[in-house]
Image (cartoon, rainbow, N blue to C red; front, side):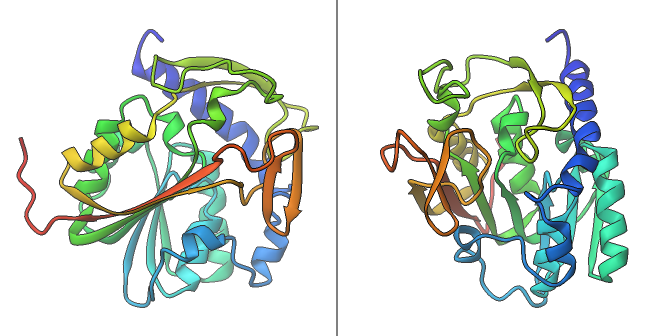
Length: 272
């Protein structure tokens, strides 16, 4: 990439163009959400305590279904996303549901210029950090927006999954961050038949890179779990051997597909 603005422009355009397709998809099932169903999965629900009276910052929130699900649990939630179209839709849903959530449209790294607040919880899940080139800067954002003693809830697709090609037939990508991955996709994970052709730029990040970024920015790891399934049907060649647990058909439970991290900000953080 020639500059940061290039990848941001490409990815913002991609997410803007697929937002309405996602809103209409069975994958996101907005209708069920509006009828009261939570969009949160058991992995993250097991990491969340009573949210009543808690302030929550949801990073890379897309069009806000998880943000609003957190608000339904009693949290006061702020969602952030790069896509202005997604944030527009999130605000519409917040108004329609009358839930206590607000939304900010900006690049994640630019968030300190849009928000001056500390939160009890920073929350970010599923398909988020791959859009970010610098994970240490991500760790700094997480730390800066957490109150002392505040908690990060982070659930992400396992970096082993991103090593494979789309058919999971061969290892095609580096486990470690070896630079930007620039590709074009037809359709989206939420609707593979959608009449969309989209460019995107992503980065792979190892678990070690992620944990180091948190430790370097004043957080203490309290849990790390790996899961041999995805709670989302968002890959090719998927089977569902148990309700809500999806695996790659020919790989079964042989590879990790998701991992979760809970970390707390130290009461005293010294900046280097």
